[in-house]
Image (cartoon, rainbow, N blue to C red; front, side, top):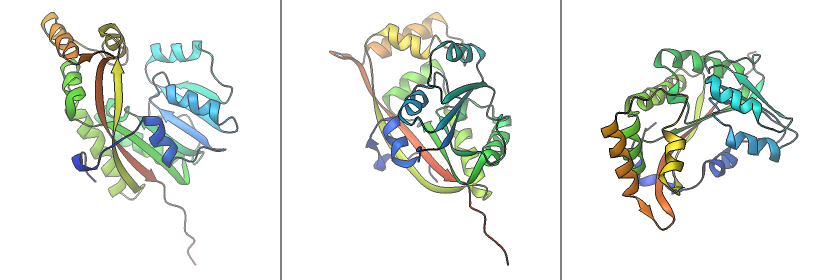
Length: 241
């Protein structure tokens, strides 16, 4: 397993990558650390015969999720990945989209154990994590440098594979095109957040804004955002004679 593989990137969206690998027809699917659950909402509408569960540890975001209309086959729960409110072996697919590195390092082993517990034999775990590289990362690290926590998330995935609890089906790297029409849109998306406490003084705030505006073009500030996908599977049971 590698945290970054510069020569293997393709251009794709997060949803396209998920649709490529995840069997969602008549599935019971779980998102951990869902945020606004944008993609999960889309999948719930597309696959009405499937059941979707989305969990979020941030109470303010959870309240927003509950206050907005959503498909009947999507339910929201408040809670962290280290304490999943689902029965053993009841989930076909679980995913974390850029959220594993937000789990405190001390809770990552418990989160992995919980994922293994709730997955059915043969079930899939899909981890999407941002890669610490590129111009967008340079901008984002001025807001909150995530180098250490992203490495911790990678090691947690490595650990559950090394333990044999989940097997690695594949590791994939891709760039997602991103465009922000103006500073206010970017600021609302990445600075005025509730899931992470930021401490940004005036000088650093001005630096972030300057770097953002240096990427402005006719359509806005455009970036290629590098990501890594680790696709894991829970082993199926084998009979012993």
